[in-house]
Amino acid sequence: MRTIERLIRRAWWRLVLTDVLRTLAVTLAVAGVTLFAWRMVSSVAPAPAAWGVMLGIGAGLSVVAAGVWSVLRVKRGDAVARRVDERAGLRESLSTAMAISAQDDAWSRAAVAQAERVATGVDLGKTLPIESPRAWPAPVAAWGVLAVALALPAPDLAGVLGEAA
Image 1 (tube, rainbow, N blue to C red):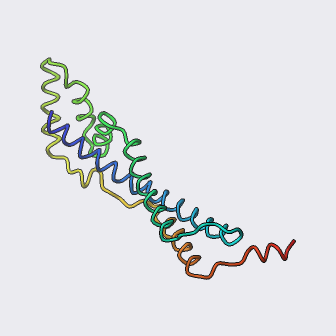
Image 2: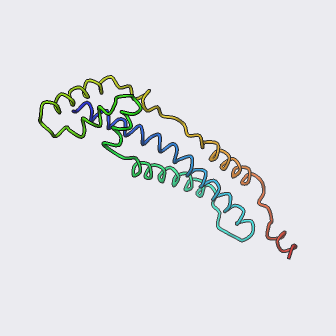
């Protein structure tokens, strides 16, 4: 059963890492858009803007939020075993072994032993590949627009709004 538990633990970490990447794309995009909005607001009304600190805080909070959210969201145990079973085509071997591991009858011991043998041949790199999320263009675009907004002089929107009134 130790082999199965080790495999499930490693699979859980792979699922967390994949989810962190996916969530990080979203949180970085939100942080970039929020900081861009702050840049526009600071051109209308005086607002504190230590941009080096704000960029660091925005990126840091995005990473922490993505990590915490992913660790809390990714299920453990049986759910991970079912996911590995499904992806590796194991026909519920691992999840069944985890469910019956406490039983001591002959069939249960045989099923757990068979699942142990199967678990040694699972290649998690192929079964649960770590993929980059499809949403990666969003944070790149958001932070790119923010970089351009910070590189250019702040627009005087207060003057434009005053003339329009």
